[in-house]
Image (cartoon, rainbow, N blue to C red):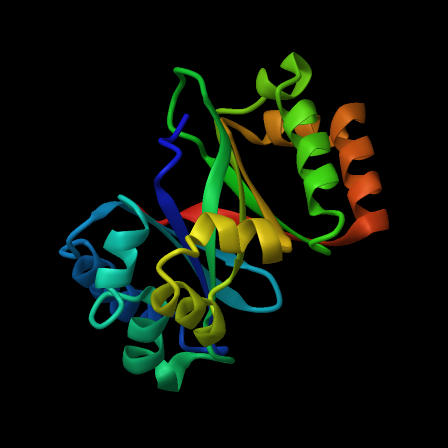
Length: 226
């Protein structure tokens, strides 16, 4: 389980058709730049196909202070916007998140992975969060997963950052508690059979159906790029 003070930053970049090779080279350069950022714990890059090619970056930071210090030179969304502007379909999306749960078992490196983004109103997110936490801890689901985590967060907007930086008494956690409307599940499996079995589990199906009544779900299949 990740330390509670760590801040997870998730950045999504959608690439124009036919720009795959050029985009791959540039985004790898951006990842190398990010790795020199003070306070950065880890960075992972994935790609996938969903309405065109996309890249998804996961960067984990020591704490809020480390992230705020990195704003000028090491913001993933800003680096993507500057160095890949001519390759992007739309401006990059970015979310600031805290880990709620993590699970791993000793096994071979995962060959299949996916991210599930769930949009829920702030009024209902706590209930949906608890439902998923309970379900994800069930042995029927855990036994099929290689590595997984569950996180909660908000869109990284200028307004959110400004509130935090100008109000020392308001931490990111307090801001998330008040305004967060996004839950993220990261799933990975050692083979395709485990992946299909996971999605077919009644527990997962019930979780998915109950969440769709409360908000939206976007599933992004991933390929590991590292």
